Length: 614
Image 1: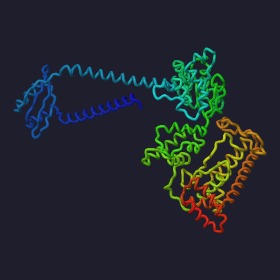
Image 2: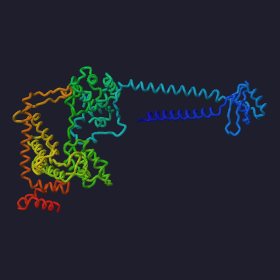
Image 3: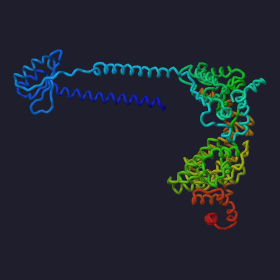
Image 4: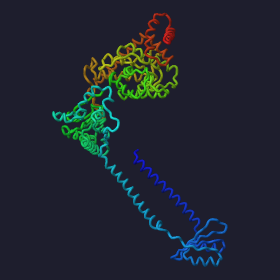
């Protein structure tokens, strides 16, 4: 809440308090006055009964009216009565032998007769004007729907440049010429060059030192027809007054969605706003110095008109950072955070494949919180590991009470996943295996990818499905029963298999054909838009089942071949609850010797655990 609103509320509260106080005092005064006031007839009766001890007569000079103040016998509080003829009252008192005094009523001064009434009138007038101004301000706000909600940043605060943007080297190089144009537009004008329209936004403004207008796409659209278009006009008018500058529209898909895809038709408010945006972006002079930038993660649903050259000439795809980019991003967010000697940001970058810049910032922030909770003034590597589990999987619930049977089921389930991660070449190795509950999961197996591939191969996708089924297979093998704990694994395996068949052309029966449409039109209108028939749909389902069944058979074969490892890993998990990569991989070295022995599985398990602990 801003200061003006706070002062306004404080003033209203003060007025209400004063009004209540005056009301209470006035009510109290009236009650007291009514208790003390008597009529002149009552006064005469008291005098006749000799109940009046002394009287003070207040008379007016001009006319014989006045006020009688008197005290009755046995009472300390004085009473009063108004009289129309003071002379008559004096005669009554003299006849009844009642002592009295006569005084003239004090005349009010100029303060009471003139100044105070004038001040009261003036205060009332001022109060009326204040209330009217507030009403007008409210009306003005109601008339400000057409004003743009964009915020202009002219760089008076902390300046953001490309130095604060890590992991996007090629993207920054691509935007360097935009910065150069904003700094030296004349150089481009002289050679007849046209700067690309609609191109990291704040960093570009910071590098160029130009004003930066930022607004969200949803800020344009209101329930009132025409408001969005008015706001677009107002935004571009302000931008022209501050050129050269940058306009950044975040989540532009809220206003630039493909026209005709909704139920509103051509008169939809969002479509009117889009039409105005298209007009404004086309209306620039060749080198007017206004750069329009926007961001969205749904380019596929944008209207084709806004993507054509002349509006958005350049599209900079900002994907997930690679391992080098993640290391640079971690270095940026680690500034100001004291790190221990054991912290290895390169190793953290390797274990955070698929993390965005925001994810990495959150990871280090959670690690700092964990260090502070431990009353340490620096972050250690295990803080980052614990934060990795907390942000990626969920907070470990060590206090949760779990039965021994559920622990054993979870231990074998996670051991099944871990074995497949280790054996299959493209999905491991294993980083951590745990049976400590996290979030909704009873445990987890975390891999550590040693490389990042640009493309996902058919073989790796089949291995991903195989790994997902390992937990269910281990449960069925050991307990001759299955649980609901593998529901998410089954969903994951099915989604991969369906994508292989429908999107990537990896089915021999269906061939290299893409099934399904990349559009939201059907979803918005509420009808099925699939471009294939029932026969093909049945074949797709059969192919998905075939892929999952083949992976299931492969996973079963591998787990049967590593039955000793399964037992040893499960028992180690039951003992320690969480094991590291070194502890897990040590099981494979020990199992070879253990298999040659003629001892029972239980004895082998006991010896291997003892050896690992040593």
